[in-house]
Image (cartoon, rainbow, N blue to C red; front, side, top):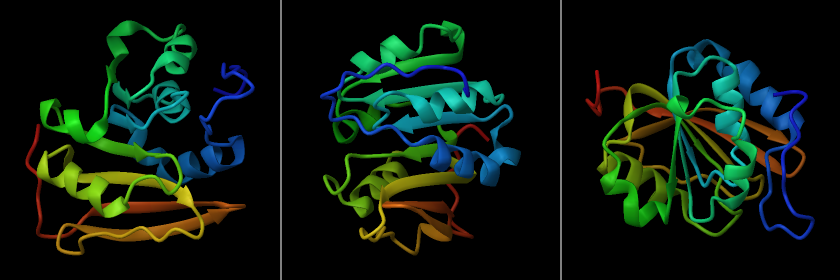
Length: 178
């Protein structure tokens, strides 16, 4: 994805993950990407899912309430490699019928409670056993988890952005597509 220009209008409220943060994320999770099923929640420009596809992920579900910019950016990807789900995550999560190996979560900073997003993922069995969640948020916002379901395994701060790596807690399995 290095030489690919992402399309966004100058007055856009979409805040794409910076190159530095994106490269840091993928240098940490590179072993899990190949053949993985990805969810890019609150996808915006789609940069995280597109990067995963360019690194060998088998499929990506992009989800956002406004997919205009994603649709402009995804034109070079084979349509057999992705699905675009246009809608509110909390309203359509129960309609998603496949679990992911990796879920990228990059909501508008401060708009949603992390615990609500993560519990919706668990309730709807959107993450496979041994799956990984990569949560991007403002560095001063704590990621709240249900420790019976999830475990924070790593956090990294890059400027005003915090990346939190979360896995399904040992003993709690979400048996989707295993």
